[in-house]
Image (cartoon, rainbow, N blue to C red; front, side, top):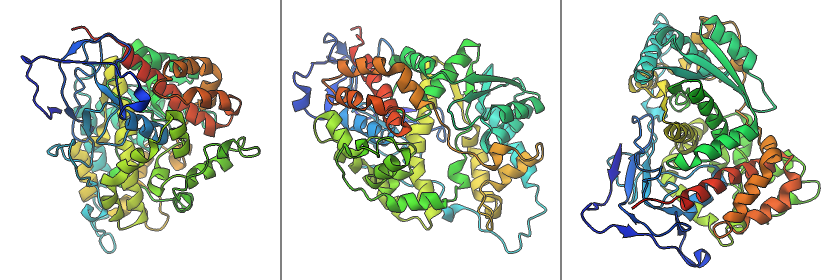
Length: 515
């Protein structure tokens, strides 16, 4: 769904884009096509409803040869370097705002929209003494509604492919897919060096009678595939699974797949208990500004743990909840050649009132992670599939299914009150078909081989940094200074962010738009 927030008559004279002579002394935006000849375009501010919880977003006219010139927002670029995504309701373009989950489509995102988390603990069903509803067939109802959600979300997809890890959400979804869409092919990505879920995922798929494929991570191939579609991506995020998503989706499209089934969406309403480590990191995040070179000191630069802790000290507690290692405020300002980071940090303001009203640390974390989930985790799939002409399906976002879980399922079926294990109902559903599975019991975060990317594509990213010197004058310096440190995944994660941002900016501003 999209709304044009100001009217633009197609009969009126269209705007003409003009290059900014000195972008470093200009405002915090640059013309998105400064290297192209001035062209006539029709454009106006847009408001796009962009959340699978609200339906399928419409990115028509945002990418491709006939897309109008738009201004890239410098602060949004800083958002990505600091957090790997653009703070909603903003986007990478100055005049496009996004209605992500928590904002209302009826609000004007150009003004001062209010954020309200939709899955507050206060809206969940209260637990009952002694659990008198223990005879209720929770697993059976869960399975039926999830099957219906799969059918509904994929009804226009001729050949769906399930993105299948070995974790809880993928496994419970595979069980439903086997009943609702048995023509689905499962595909598992072996992404990083820490975990290998292929064997477990293959066992699940084949037990269920589903076809299974595996794609081994080749970071160079994944990056090349990203470069091939970057100019067709309507908007930008740098989620740390973006390149693997592009790699997978390109592979699926090449094998005749029409769409992907993605297992995102359940965490927000099931809830996720805050671990002891997460509580510690929250307390360590103090928002202290340190010199940009602190993580490059001898004995520090080679230690992921020390670098991670120093990075945490420089984040706010909410921003520490967001996944991955990212650029510090001092580094961002150095890369831009001027202060921009504080404007990015200020974009947290619309969320603070709601997050501060959390009644528990668990709820506080769920609200905080929903920001990154909307603009990062969901965005990577939506933008990638849009670029490839595919459909992304999110059964866990189905309104009937999610509202039933959120409002009807008792708390002890969500989080065990004694063990604090989450998604009890999901685990019970899996147990109807499988014994204990290793990555259902315990699973870490998804990891892309960021060190391999730095090793294989440093020169390519460096070339993009040289081309984008007028935009990010410090990027070349950072790359050259830290090249020998990229074997540490803390520094390699920052390289990943530049690898995503630099070519997207360059490709989108040098593409000529026909009159």
